[in-house]
Length: 236
Image (cartoon, rainbow, N blue to C red; front, side):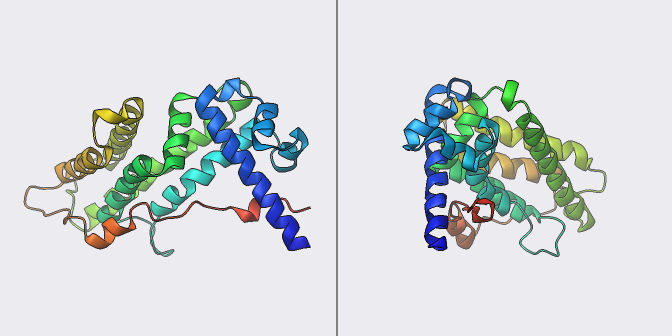
């Protein structure tokens, strides 16, 4: 019975997140109440408060469910490694582009985060989460660049801080431009070329920095399933 209760609670939580995604995309976050989300999910308002303290917490859970698989793909594959190699860094970013194009949930939450939310009022606390995520992204890039410098792949004169910020701006800009007008260009094709061009531009001319992406790497694109954070589920 306890297991059934846990599964039912998980299903309710997922219905709430699904409903929030659709309503946030259609109306914008500020124009959706918790009551609207409960009605769309077919549950009571009390069911929302069983799982989420407020709309900000629900929004955060919605974003994490869609983006955690991408974030996990941007961490070093070995727990002992403190950095990504440049080829791993490239794959992680290309996987973001691929997922934005081909995974409906990823695309939807990117659209919400970029176009449908104002970080004011009850959502203001989430601004820090967004800033922290960007700081971590920049530091991750910088660690990869510092490692590449140590290996002689990138010149010792490289300002890795500037390079790290520039890569974030490049990827963020591509995603924003594509989300505004998806038909204007192929995000995967242009994104991969842009990332590879940027990384290659950092290296000395006589260094073959990035081999072509392997078939195995391409096969893995978009293959990470939607993260089910059952450890966060309240089963009381």
